[in-house]
Structure formats: structure tokens, C-alpha cells
Image 1 (spheres, helix red, strand yellow):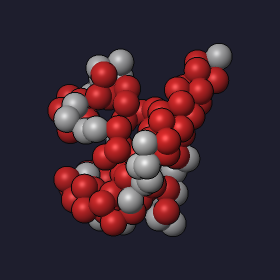
Image 2 (tube, rainbow, N blue to C red):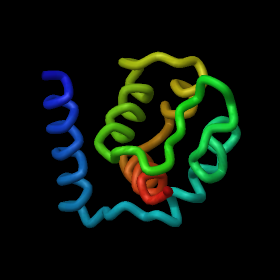
Image 3 (cartoon, rainbow, N blue to C red):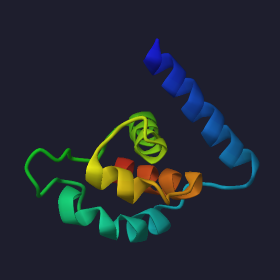
Image 4 (tube, rainbow, N blue to C red):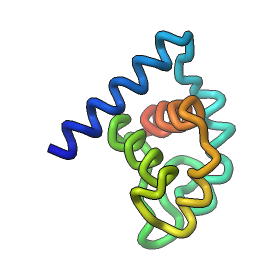
Length: 102
């Protein structure tokens, strides 16, 4: 049930972004990922133990997780601080970038 809700939330958010003329920007996502590289690696393959690989991850999953860290629904000391200032457009860019990696 929760997965259905998260999927619907993502669809609504991405639909709103698309209707406002915002498309995910891979180049912007790559630039924004510089901060992520310290733990998740420059190619989306984690360099820190216990840190997930992000390369090729499902877009719905990544979007939902970043929004959960941003809102405080999901807690992690590092990720909460990093996700807090992200806009929906920045999250969409990061998600698109990491999803594009193999």
C-alpha cells in the first residue's frame, strides 16, 4: 500500500514538474551530484561501506527516498542534512542522472 502511495506521489510530482515546463536535466543532476560522490561514488557506485549504489536505480524509488529524507520521514544524519535544501527540480535532476548510469 505504501509503495502505491509513493508511486502516486511521484507521478503527481513529476506530472506537476512536466506541466510547469520542468524536465529533468541530466547535466544539472551530474553537477549537483558532486556532493553525493563522497559516499555514493562519482559513478554512482558507493565508495563507503553500508552506502547504497545509486547507478541505475529506479527513478520512483530514488525520488521517494530523497523526498523522505528531505521531509524527515526517513532519518539519516548525513542524508537528512544533504536532502533538506533540495528542490523538487533538483531531486528530479539527481534522480534522472543516477538512473541514467549503468
